[in-house]
Length: 492
Image 1: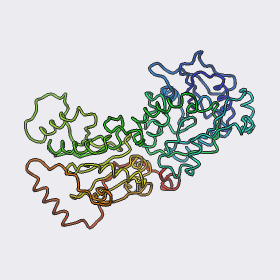
Image 2: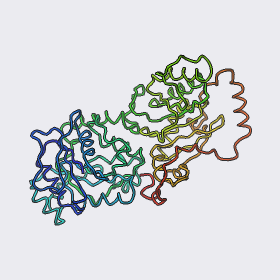
Image 3: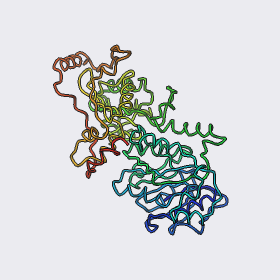
Image 4: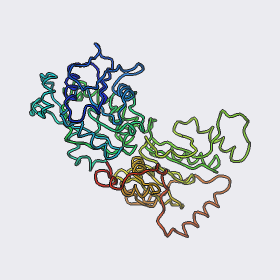
């Protein structure tokens, strides 16, 4: 357990007193309090769990995210639990959250939280009441204020109806396995407000399932900061951090000309064998659409700028060198020998032939359908022949966790999130009328006529079978059982 703390020694004493009275075996837990610059320094109270220690947040940063990373690095447990230093929890709190982690290793469990003005309590009173199972006697029920997250969880049937369950994972009491935490790289120490939501967003993109357990009750000592005199400033600060790091918050990205830290869509082109003009045209088309927070990954064999030797003046190597030098200085363009397993932290990935890049508002319309229908994958039959795929990152990541050896990821995505097949022209409709398709770049080198003829031939021949989805990167061996795809595990 990791408790980031700054000052408020008395509240920490009450938190540790409740932790000392848990039904979960104390021999199986360690508690690390991370002192994030308290003056005077924090101390361990007399009533505390048996395996409790204090460490000082290391230099080079400050804030809960930085402190959490320090505590996680010092901890040795398989499960990491984050608890605020002003939370009093019921006796079954840890047991209720930790039991879920015996089922599988990609769960994030969330405890309950209510607020109250801090009553006059002693650590002895807290320990005695929690130990005898009389948690409710510590607080006046009429004075408890329900948190907005609890109300959201109840309204959405325990998150079963939630489109973005990560949004309720706001941090005061959360547990997950260390392997899942390592997968997303821990907390972002640069985020000083809203770090829990940003962290939970990255967990969602890694395929995590969020489990709120109402049996894990807790009371937060003090009212939420958003209700205080600095409410507006705090909200503005949180939104500033989230705007760059949580692309699904479309309401925060209304400045269309701005560059954002994390793209909304990663567009992937296989540039193998394509000359410089074709690659440049495809990249320009993808980056000039109505969606401005787009990044492009070019897959191929790319030169090392530091390698010795002069340029080759003709052939594929010359074109690759031109493309690389032209685009490597654009932060929106990436070069790779193969695509990463998922687009994380971007929430979507669009993969298309290099001669059929998305143009105009095509990506915007497709992602809107994905969000509205909560799809895991959209397979698009292109007007000129061939297919493109739009993948939801969290669906692909979940499929990689669940897939049995040799099982197609698209089949798993179909079971957990759904796969839809559609024609490109469906996304070029406006106000009930067909929009003319935006002009795509013509292949270079005098090949336009041949390419047009090939596309026309494909249209004449037609495709008897439904277009096949381009298979996402294969899962690692050792997939999960089928039961985990259904019910609570479907789109959580």
